[in-house]
Image (cartoon, rainbow, N blue to C red; front, side, top):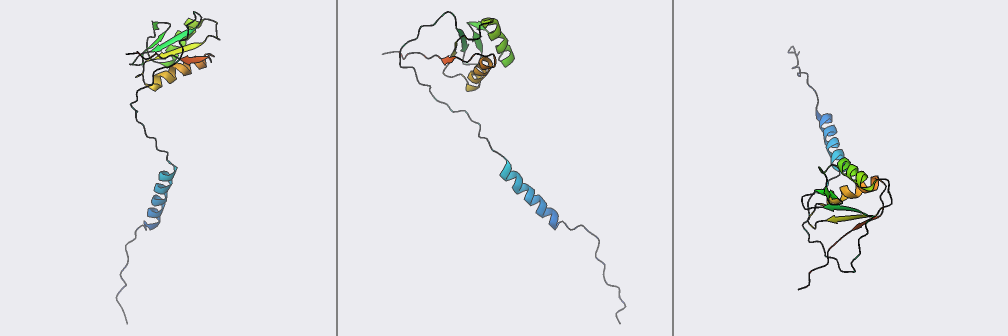
Length: 139
């Protein structure tokens, strides 16, 4: 006869299924996440080769310098917020919503500043946009 009581196992939580669930969640998030590579590409923008275009008086001129500061018809905009730029454009165009927009951007201007200017103009109904460039200096 065996009179000794059998050793009891201490109660515990089986974590094997938990490990499986965590592993599946890890795989799910790795597959469903989109990765963006954010970098700035340093390039030299090409110079224009073509005919010069005469500027008309009834057009909107948006100039962006290297630091991203906006100028609307040669008047500096207070800051680089899109709402401020839209207000400056509204003041410049009045009730003329068919004016052509000429964007003069420095070659080293961040592209986000150019996109902000294009967004502000298009949100106000200005759809005729063009970019200006300079003719290369002949040696």
